[in-house]
Image (cartoon, rainbow, N blue to C red):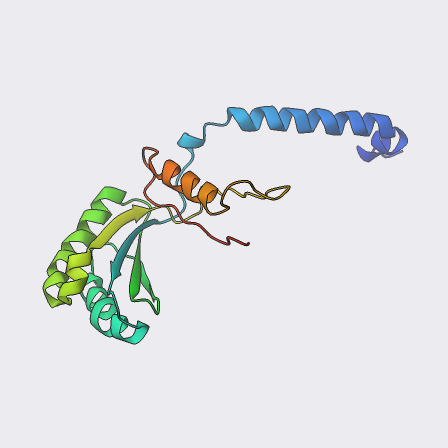
Length: 183
């Protein structure tokens, strides 16, 4: 007769249930004890350049801001790829990805130097409103969802805005956004 590991579990469903619960409890306990800071980083570093051309449409912003910045940033040392987005309100965002081995602050300085070289070619209104260069995490770290069970007694826009402004004050957090506000 051939011994099978599955046979005792098939014959005794209570044993199967107890073993499953024990495995789940041990997994939950061990998950809390994992040293996450010791795990290797696998997502590439990302530096984001944002600029705003007030009063411009998307085509004007692309021609006068995004293209100028991309042309100057292209070829920055150790950059893997660049992607950009320009909205119809004149806001431009350029993301530059760097390999995991590069220090994020070093990558930010490399991009900042290139942006400084491009500032003389940008419209004066863009330089006045400012160009920001930030190191960002390429993934969403935390998401909050709010849903009132009954008619809210406060303005529904106040709570997410308060949470956003409070969370940005946390040390190490550089960016926060409100998404999907449904009334």
